Length: 139
Image (tube, rainbow, N blue to C red; front, side, top):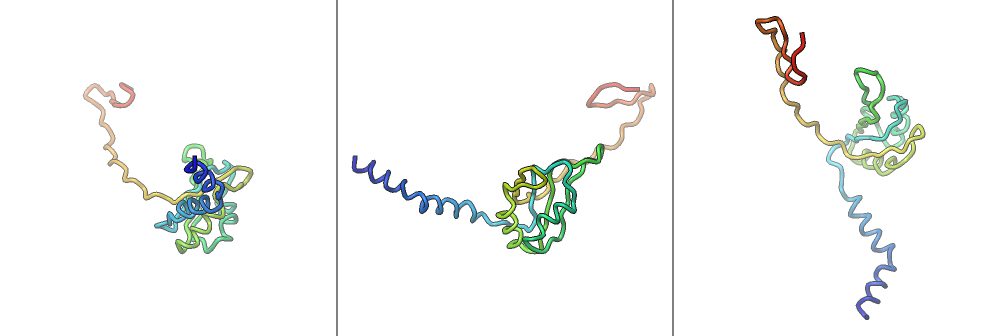
């Protein structure tokens, strides 16, 4: 019984416990000044992104990723600062905030994974047909 009351007293001190866990979560420092921004509105442009993130430091680049086929935003972007400290301030200041009416999320950017080498274009067979290995025969 005394043990439970001790635990309850400890849990009542939530600011101390909460601030300890918050500091652990925020202590995950960035290793690169590049940030990944997700949850963007399809109408968000590079200029709007620069405007929103410029107050946290000197931007090197703010690039909304565009779909090649449709020419529209894919809903995510990359923002690069000159220093890691500026990127950390932007991450803390813009994560879970509204931009163009949408809630955005700011996370550290991960290094790009290498792509597998592209296979050469398939040559027509003796019969004149081209084999598309993912779909089947096409002529």
